[in-house]
View 1 (cartoon, rainbow, N blue to C red):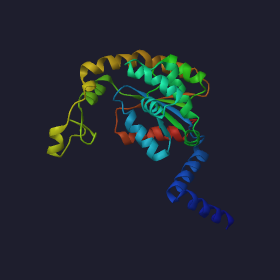
View 2: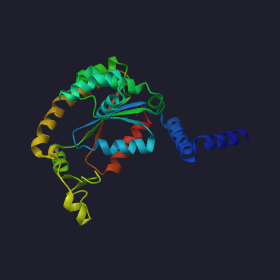
View 3: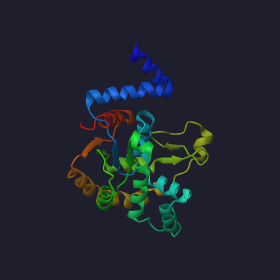
View 4: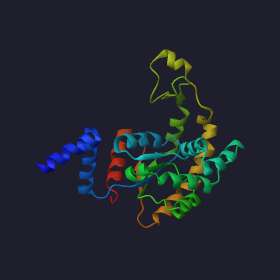
Length: 248
């Protein structure tokens, strides 16, 4: 009876949805092993990292850490690191790795991140950045690579269209706009062309193996390769299993 009353008190404190969700994941941890605390999601541009991050945050509560978003937030907040980064950004220069790592490290110290776990989307992009993350004490439990062939990436990227009114993203093949009014105003972003994609893909391939090799040598870090050329929900089923079982 006492356990039942404690359970009711917990439901009242955090809400029924949050309580049962946390209980479900606790049970999953007990059955399958330790839940991941930190994860790096890697993949080429257009590999589906953003889609998977949305599902992870909504379903499992991880804190999505986008370096671009964190830089902008630090600048807006006027933090010391943000003020330094702002100077480089206004000058049109790349923000140095040490500043980016510092902002990431500051974010990881926040109570919410420590409680829920974190997921870095597409960062680090080089072995130097991976080493800097390690030196700052930011080591993931897993590095998940979404593997998608280049020809599929090309089709995904060049077919993307953006609605300037709602900022919704469509695709000429996979997600066409059904409303004629919306379809008429869709635009292709300048960096979604084949010409702009080529150097981005080259940079990705030039660095991804070095990053994976780095983490394969790190104790306590597992590198997982997932086929990203499937339906998003199918991919997420595998991703979720990996996140709920750090030892898988």
